[in-house]
Image (tube, rainbow, N blue to C red; front, side, top):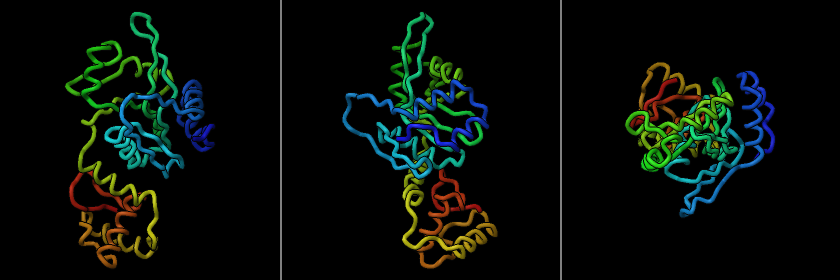
Length: 246
């Protein structure tokens, strides 16, 4: 766990005009991960992130880990932290409480976002139990007004994510591509292979992987997947089958 904000991330935050209080919050979150016992069986996943050069610990495989996989397919993500500094909240009755977001995402082109990841059934119960803190804005679309306000005061946005935000095909593809993102091939993609594949895709956008000419079927798959995973080739991860665009 890094204890200070990397220079390039601090420069980015300043360029995005993130308020001083927001930068201070991020600095404190870099210094400590706020994990708390859940009382549930162990389902944590330790994810070695190539983009942040750190190990991200998620506390649920089906929800937080899925969120991490989704975020690592987004080229606008510059950095992310898990279990950040607790937000200090005050409800309408003046009662003080806290909330520890699951993730802080630092984007390359927009203000940072604090994210809460929970099953919809859990959030729905909290809407009934804590009506001031949780709200069902539309069916199965949830908000956390107090946390959102605290995030806004820091210059951040806030988002609640449930399983309804995940597409099964997208998640399966993201998981499959993850190993190609984290590890290079035993025989790395050559410039000739990369150029050839990109030329074929440019000439025929939406071409299926089986139509791409690049050595043996196994080599073709490795080259195409590695190129997609590293941002040199693009495809629609939410669509079954394999098609790409340059």
